[in-house]
Length: 189
Image (cartoon, rainbow, N blue to C red; front, side, top):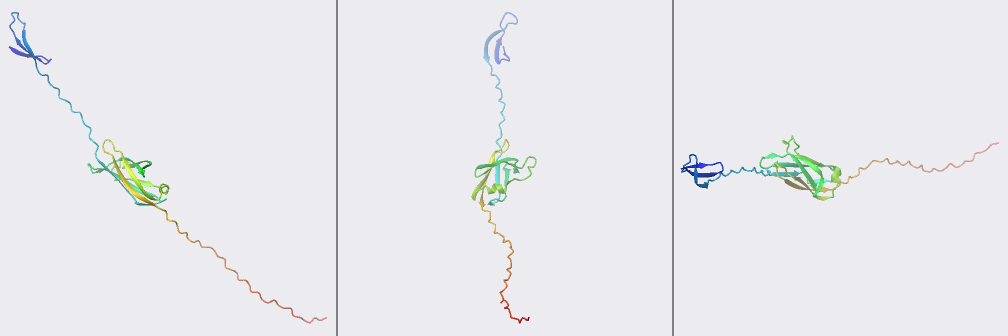
C-alpha cells in the first residue's frame, strides 16, 4: 500500500489486489491541502513629508512705495529647504500669480522674494492687510501656508520747499522839488 500524489492536489491511497497485472484498485481518495499562495505585498505610497512655510517683511508699508517680502519653505523631517512655487494672496485675494521659492537648481538658497511695486502699494487702502502664501505641496512634500500682517500708512505729504523769488526792489520815487519860479530879468531893447 502506498500514497500517490498528483499535481491536481489529490492524494490517492492505492492497493494492488487486481489479478490483472498493472491494474490498480482505488480504495479511497482524500484531498490533500493545496498550497496557499503567499500574497505579494502592495507597495503603499509614503505620505508627503511635512513642510513648514514662513513669510516675513516690513510691518509698515508706505503707500506708493516699494515693499519686499521673503518666503521660505522648509522640510521639517529633512531639515532642508524645499523648492517650488507658492500662490500668494493679499487680503485673501489672489495677488497675481505664483511666486517661485528656491527655483530648481538653486535649492541651496533659503528663500524667495516678492516685491510689491509702488503702484501695487498705492492701490492698497490705508490700514492693516494680510499677505498669505499657499504651498499646495507635491508627491514628496506636504502643503503648508503662512500669513503675516502689514499696515499701509499714508505717503508723507512733502513740505513744499520755498522757491526763492526775485522780489523787485522798489525804485524810490523822487520827491517833488519846488519848481523854479521865473525871475524877471530886465529886458533891454
